[in-house]
Image 1 (cartoon, protein in one colour):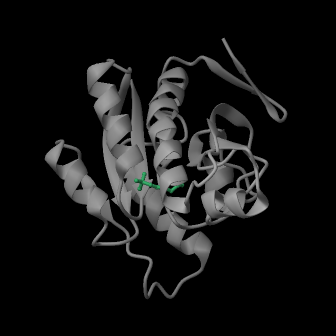
Image 2 (cartoon, helix red, strand yellow):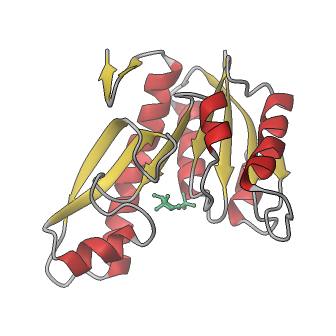
Length: 205
Ligand code: GRF
């Protein structure tokens, strides 16, 4: 069975939805470890209460380069069996850019969720960006991670209509509901080897 590593920095609600779905829907993947770059990430407690191993690789005060930090993360992942051959890495609110070295080693094995319909509104504060732009629709995207910022091949998207009077908070809340639905679904597809990458496209069988 594949081994899953989830990287978080905070709340961990996407992590929780993935872990719950693995149990409930019998997704054929073993939640091996949750790693946070912040020791006080709320998600760590949730993971622990769900019986998943947790690790902290603190980024604050880390003197080395991005590649050196990621080397540490990759070491922890490997120790838990989340390897480039037998692993999947889910970024779930992990507030760090991944180094090209990490991306290369885990090619097409790192996925991320982004709270907008990529390629619109990449980077931070996507819900705020969508509102400021006056978009009528936004949503969320699960995609493979490549060396760019939110640029990898798209696996799944869900559309959310923007209502008049929406605030960043109300829109984020509705998008988050969709995130919790499609992220576990994408993990399920990956675990069942139903995703093939062909250039920029993914083919779901
Ligand atoms: C989510 O909105 C996700 O799309 C973005 O960061 C947020 C993380 O939330 N990448 P949570 O930690 O999963 O609750």
